[in-house]
Image 1 (cartoon, rainbow, N blue to C red):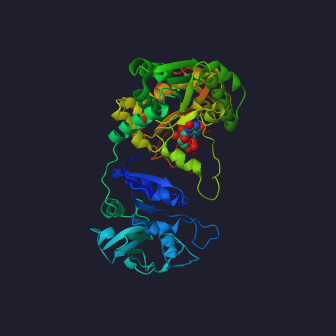
Image 2: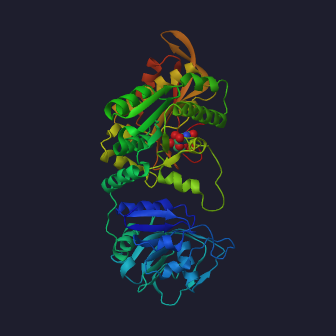
Image 3: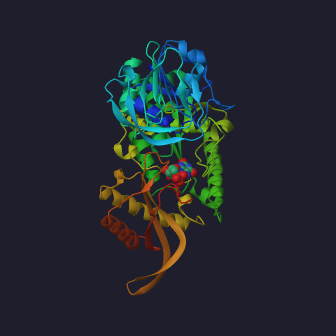
Length: 513
Ligand code: XMP
């Protein structure tokens, strides 16, 4: 990337992506990098500033992550947040006080110096604290620029060297003027230009893809989801028919999905697309499987087999493209303390590149989801595609509790169709992060036209969320819920009862399996 860059050094804070989002909102490019990053990488002309993130460690821990201390004397402005501030203090000869108890929650910051970092920040404002240790003595050349009731040195600075530290978290929404503080650092102190826009991204990405692939062919597994769709159209713009997309219909998709994909990508975008109907193979492989993780594994393996089979028919392919996003990249890197517990193995096409010995192209790997949507808009993709709810790789299989049969898939597809079309009609679709139906392995008694029925129960799940990590159940108006339930029961054969899921994540997850 030739853009001016802010490097965010990742010490394991759960808020790192928030820092990156805040910097990108200022139209400044940033990268989250590991503490082991080389000094040569940091000392590039394009690097305009460094942010040291927070993290769960104490600087006195034996295995505490450290970074190359030479970065403080490169003349590049540095902002240390929480652990980052303590590390800066310790590296430059100050002292950090070990504290047995944590300070967690809201506090009041009193600014004692309004120059640079706290320019235009009021004397008193709310901040968000989350720390154990704190700075006791500052390194020489530093002065205090802010205090709070429990933390005497809540912020410090070496104004000449443009080194700053804050004990609180300016990146979280609870810090009242956090945005302003980050802006002061990124724009005024680092002097960045705001040259990161989706227009410039598209131009550069197209040039990069052309340069990388030369005359070779690229293959891409198109799922119809936002990420692989945007990747496909972007790469098509770069290399035209040298891109071959493969769409696998696993029989676990939404109603008319295969047709929609064909219409949009083949007819509208004129993409070289191969559609494979492998639904029978998937349903057969899933026969009598009820364990969610086993379902995922079988679907993953079957996908790879089908995809490989088709890929072999295409000659001279050198690259495999994927719609990997920045959060996937950061999370799969797992900075400290080993991987977190696996709740669900989110299968995509992760196993493919290794097996197929192809070079990877991931043109979206430095973007966040909302940036991908902006790229899609920039390259002329329709809003209905860009605003689609997420849909899991294993599709309806993890929404059919118990046996996955052709008949149960067909029922759920119809139910889902009534749900989604009603939400669209009621103007609710875009207000919801994700909505879907779950087919339960439960039958209940009903009455229809004086006749007793004994049919399936479906649950409706609709959630609001920012990133899928946490979620709340959507407060859909009763009138709309009534319409959804009426349509499903009246129009879908085999269902006589609808219930609404009112659990939030955590402790529940979004999908039921
Ligand atoms: P959970 O159920 O873990 O879901 O709260 C969070 C988000 O991830 C999606 N999800 C998946 N996506 N493969 C995927 O590609 C999977 O196996 C998978 N499982 C869950 C889910 O739809 C939600 O958006």
